[in-house]
Amino acid sequence: MDEQQLQQKIAKVLEVLRQDMGTIRTGRATPALVENILISAYGGSAKLRVMELATIGVQDPQTIVITPFDHSVIHDLEKGIQEANVGLNPIVDGQILRISLPPLSKERREELIKSMRHKLENGKIMVRQLRHDVMNNIKKQHTEKIISDDDMKRLEKEVQRVVDETIETIEGMGKQKEAELLQI
Image (cartoon, rainbow, N blue to C red):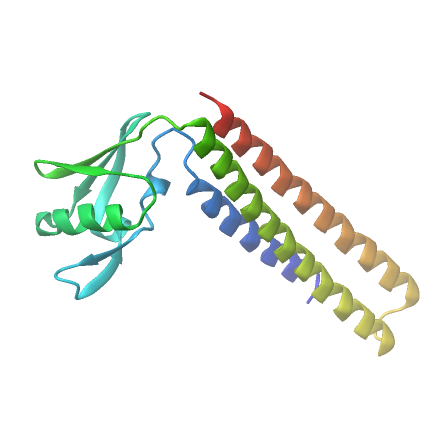
């Protein structure tokens, strides 16, 4: 694995982490809270995500509006979101579903921060694993005399620099999300 592959894999880790962080509720309505919830639709014959069954919009900072493409699945959507156990209670309003977000309690905010920190730590672990793989590859190339001592040291420093920057980015994401969670 070379530096370019490392950059690509780190970019994937960061993207997964961003998506994961988007699912943590901050008291503001956002489509990311519901778009990936699996719904058993059409009498249980299909397992689809909400975003595959409906348009998701935000009416105001406290309300998510879901408009199904096929109105026959509106009750499947309602049931699936309730069963996902994400603390959201959809209400059928004619041809749409409305989800009003209740204000977050202090305890719930603390739970969400703890969950967020766990997700961030998992992201850091993935980055460190990538570093470990790349460092082993560099050492292997050095042992096989493909690269010189100087190249090995330079590559190791470069890899460490990239990893340090990525960890810093992850911590920045955490601080930003924590500030959003603590905002009332």
